[in-house]
Image (cartoon, rainbow, N blue to C red):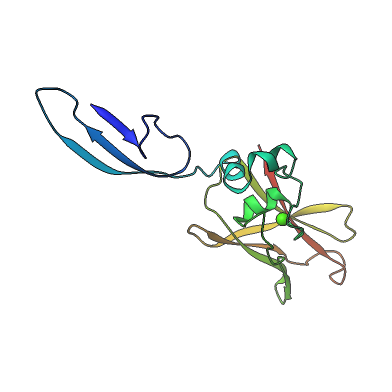
Length: 167
Ligand SMILES: [Ca+2]
């Protein structure tokens, strides 16, 4: 049996779509089959980096967690956490003030491995305390809201931020 993937005998490992041909090579039998092999990219950090950055960009440090190559204010780890493109401008997240407090609503890919989301609020950008993080709508992506109910401190001077941490 001879099996080829896009015409070569080497089985692919990178994400993509490959034409597979299988041909019986036994002199006493004949047969052939073909199909398409689809390898989907994983959703872990390393797969995400490999999907969005070239080897050269990675070696230049453009794929590091805290770097922001598209200059949109979201470092790469935040782009990964939010499921956005690290090489194209993403509109900033907007905080909304209403009768329930200060909130930021965002979407995120479901079940990114090894990633923790947290929300924190502050009056002075120095001391931060935990804020509520609630899933509004499950799915992939799912919709999540970070909320500071403004039940303590000075509601006129409040800051709300999202924190993403990788194991
Ligand atoms: Ca960015």
